[in-house]
Image (cartoon, rainbow, N blue to C red; front, side):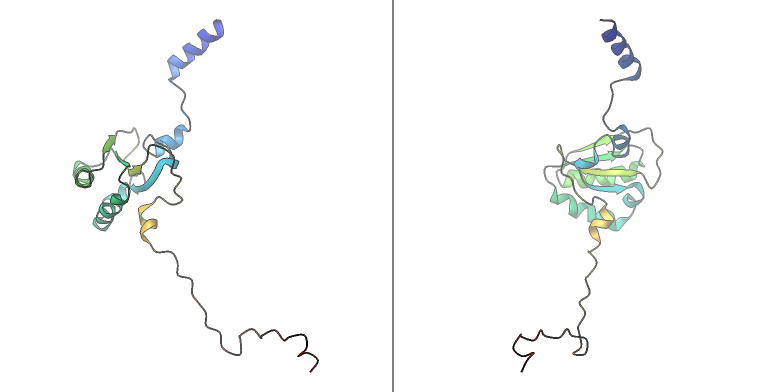
Length: 153
């Protein structure tokens, strides 16, 4: 009984223990594995990325949007209008962090793990590097393999 009492006292003073608290702070209270798309506060201020977000958000009809609460009201209202127009539920998450341009300002998230490899909107919009096909001259072309009998005749 005393061990249980000690544990309850510690839990009462420090709060319920969290799994990956640093990750949850970074990703607005959720886990990275649940994210489809992310935008930093600096990216949210760019007009071309706002339009891209409006198009990309249609790809995730069962997702929801988390918006950082430290954003300026004008930026918040822009993304709230996009979410409402696309009929995607949203939540404004208040954080104790500074409102720096590198911090995450918006996330499209699922209720379960989706494990997307890349979630940054700018990286999702850039096409993959084109693999350059090299045309070989006859001088540089690999030689055709001679058959066994042609080696002798």
